[in-house]
Image (cartoon, rainbow, N blue to C red):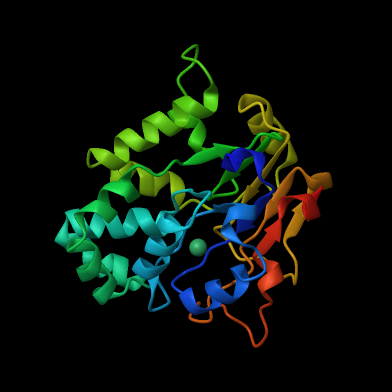
Length: 242
Ligand SMILES: [Mn+2]
């Protein structure tokens, strides 16, 4: 069965907690779910590259690019960026591991910035409309044009511009008009994102379900990890959000 025909499972920012990822996905066999990661699999935790490899090799899985992947690729290309990347949780051994693995680098640079699922749900890393600057008017599907432009930047040294967009704070929780315009521009009915931790035990749902934050501070190495940050705050089936 093609992955788009499977029910979707959304996974928020993993941030290097591969052990907890195994635990979280145990109820969801890869052949029965379309697994969609919202990005930020790396940094904070010890197993960022391990999480990337796991997500890459899991069947029926889509990985959206996050700002931490961009920072890591930037550090890989430009040693002057390593210090900054480590200041946001980058793990030196992960960079060494990525440096040795050209195939993983190539795969990572091909990840999409946006994915629109068949039910009209848009999945992206950030809860904002900064991606709109990559939209090419009258050049086909708006989502496709954003994905093409962002991928071009990833492949050709455009990490600075990617970082500008992907590191900006979420706004959809506070700005329903911008959310609505973004949904219309991308022909989507709702948007799911991570990037900025919410404080709930389940995903944060805004504006009647049109915006959903799945960054529930999944990684136990995250600076904001609290005593009990439940898996259900970050890992959720799409049908549970309907
Ligand atoms: Mn994150």
